Length: 317
Image (spheres, rainbow, N blue to C red):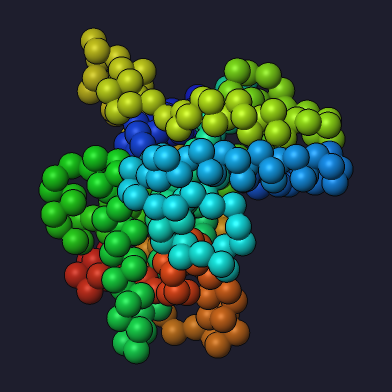
């Protein structure tokens, strides 16, 4: 069944509604400005240095609060190399965005200094590679880290109590949302003509001197840039027809998943298949997951978020 622009937009809004505070990014490949360094590269050496100095000053100012802008966990703001810090407790400059399939725009809504757990969970593709790695009995800490990430994601987004208190339900809830966000990213990456907008709606121009520093200031002034859960529900669900709106969002999600299944092998890995793989393939997956894991933990830990019960349920399916 064909996927319409309306379906895609409904799916994006549905994910945002379920993840009101920590939304996995579905920005198409090639458009993620991350910490603005890529944008500054097009402006010249002097502008890169100006951006660096501005972010250093911003990090110092943020030390007065020293809390993650998303989950409010305590940490230390920094712009130094990631190898020099305990990434689990280091707060790094992080940009937030929102996709609009109708206008084909990616709006940078705000920025702040976020902890390693939150930053790791903003990247669904890397998270799914991490989740697909096989368990290793020699490294039980990998399972602990995976459980911590899932619990962090659910708590930050105020997931229902029955999800947060049931390990199997928690894993399935996180996997489904990450799958949907990644599926949306796969589709978005095959759409041409995206425009990058700043927090006030202006088009972000590359290679224009001073753009990155001005954008960093505007994004930090805008803050986290994520609407509250109640705002999402008000926007996405019509008060007069709540059941119909929920049904439409679910239908859009189903059509989207049907449309992208098979597009990338990473999506199919989520279905809990822990089949034996060739050594070369396993090494490649671990390499791809390494950068995400480094964000969430002081040591490079890798593993699977699948629990024994969830594996058995998925195999039966």
